[in-house]
Length: 430
Image (cartoon, rainbow, N blue to C red; front, side):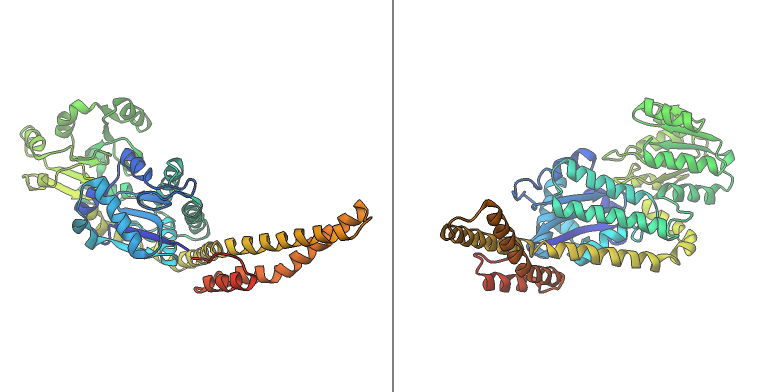
């Protein structure tokens, strides 16, 4: 039976300069998933099933493999092929888990236990999106889709049955909190949001709640910027007015999906010449980063990236930390239930083969007996038919229950092998 394998990295083990090189854009993600196969039992280039969870703080690939080493090798090939990076550059940062450990990790992620911001909501939506994308690209089959459904259900339970998300702050909230710590009163600051996606919308909402009155939004698609600006009585800028928007701003929060830096040193130098020595604070919460890190070397410019936000997070976690043991109990229960189901899949073929063989024997013997019993009415034949079916089902009931129970043990596959030998079923379980 194949193992569930997870290979990935996150903000705890890899700096942003590594994570951004392995981040997937939506199109790249879809193309990568097509290299898995869940149709017709075919095995794709990287595994028979797969799903990819790619966020600003993590990149995790879930697949099936004969062993953990094979799964890791397949994922490294995937990342090399998709990003053009040699595995030696990122392999030291990777963590890898198999079966119960992989399940526990994903369930913990969905429950908010592994996020930079403990208990944050956004990761649950990202896990859901990862599953939906994998299903749409026919990459997630029976096991991986069940794994992600279990994670989503666990995440929902954690947030409804505990206080892990009470007063939750997202990365966007933390970015605004950092701005508030720097400036104090946001009401007198000009704040520019570069990007108009979900993170920008959360940031805009938090800025308004914290007293920001002079807010503007710049986006590659001006229509989306105008749409978001209307919600928050803000100003919309077109992409071609980036320099002008930077001259106007005191605080810039960037969260685009651009594959490369959009705010470069040459742009900021031009802007600085017209800012009359006003400091410029850039908070970059995008991965890949929107702001070239060299910008931080310019006079009067202060750059914070997503890794810098971690220190700010610590101030808001005390209450939620008390809920962690409750969430961990939910995760363990869900993991055990999932693994019981998954291990049962290993004995299903044996159960099916034994029952098929038993009914084949029953039908052959019944046909032989009826040929010898002349003059048996249709009614009596039906009674004999039902009787023989019940005998077979009752004889196989206890072995079936035992096999399913034993499937949840580490050596459950051995019981399947013994059962196949005892019943004379051809073939062996893997």
